[in-house]
Image (cartoon, rainbow, N blue to C red; front, side, top):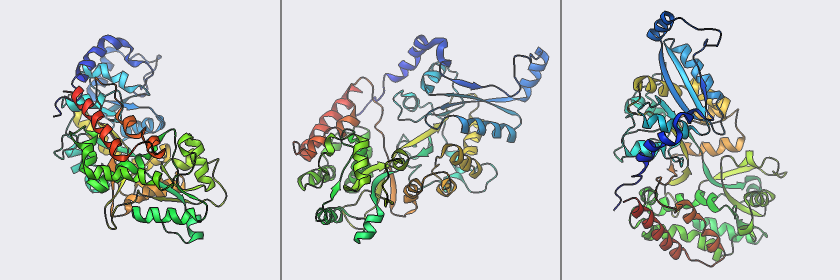
Length: 465
């Protein structure tokens, strides 16, 4: 039944010319070719000579928490390795506002780093209009100076998913640059002291909850006022019970996606936590800092969070705490384990002036040397083999151990992100997670939760038709 998701977004790109006009450079910084200053004004003859020799690569990047130091250094190194190229770097926290009018005017950047799940919808519009370059030859070739094809360096699951291959045919149009890892955290020192093992299955999880109760401890807490942290459980549980394709159906608002009995089975995990009184009392009213502090104090065994947990709470870590990390449990021993993972992508507009040069720049970013630089300057991990080890000296030990989860052969990522929808006020992420409080207060059942989500999903889908 889905027909035209994001149907109005392309028109919005054109309209942004009128809305943004010449203000596209607002909040952006652009790196000019080295040596160009107000004191140097080349003659027309010199300018023509330089232009004949130099090829300009226009790179547009989102300047978020990582800043722009990495991109500035990469630009310098690329120019040094490719002397006939000048990298014109534009970095901005509002890069969508900067490049949208350029795209609408047919003056696209050559290379873009900007997550496809960003609400600006830039990537989604390019996907809808089929305006992205096929990146197959980026991954079939090695990074410059290396011999292994990049696709053979990638971690499993990071190229064959809906975010990187949006048309379902396995062709990659968006390249993953960064990723995060979410799961359940616990105090491994406490587990060693008590002789407990991290549970593999949900049955083992709840059995451990009974053992914890005899010690006066709760099994579980979460960031009550911010229930979205439970994506560490919701999406892996659905994938484990109903298959990874069930999650993709949900993210694309497929008809009947929430009516699958195995999807309901996954949601019933939360109902079981509530009805079995496994939840730390007061959790629902806590903010994320309060819940995480209680967890670090040992009040509850498990809390869902991402690889950033230690950095976020470094001042609240208790003596005797040792970081333990595990995936969401599975329903049956031996089942594939899934990890809810967010990625940030880079891509190339198909009508960019320098598509092939942009592809070479993209390959350059997967060089081991540049992956290591990314770890050093951004404390970030690129989803290729060996990148976690390159980052080990720059990231907290807990961060390192959580990223290492993908070294285990039975663990795969679930790429988190609803398709961007226009012409609707429904926020599906809120629709999914806000009712968890009602589940925990025993005011709502899992089956009613799923039924309500199917209604909301139908409305979003219908608004796109």
